Image (tube, rainbow, N blue to C red; front, top):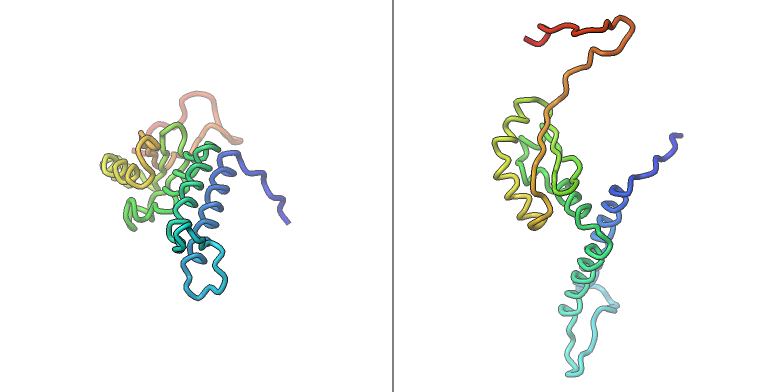
Length: 170
């Protein structure tokens, strides 16, 4: 059995934000289910009217406040981008690209080929606008789009010092 790797701090924040969002979604589903016999979220106001719909609004605000206070806004934005990547770029482009790490406002995106990387670069303005609509302003300011890397010929038994082969990819 393989030992579990310890997650990075950023991955732990993203996981915690994702779990909190799932708990909040389950709470809303349970709270809005009319078949539920027990309704602990309903309260009686001083006027005697039930305000169950109003009592759910503070849950969203509390969740947002928790994410802000713990500094998870970047991790939450990264999780949302990963979750909605196919709808941001479209299914065809999503098959050939994937979002990477969001660090200091720079979202790294890797493509399967240089042609797809070029296509993403041409669409970068529109992609940035869609991402801003999804995660809010100020979270992502720049896209760093990369294609596949060429193999390195610098190591191995038969490598030689110097320039090496030049006309390999022409």
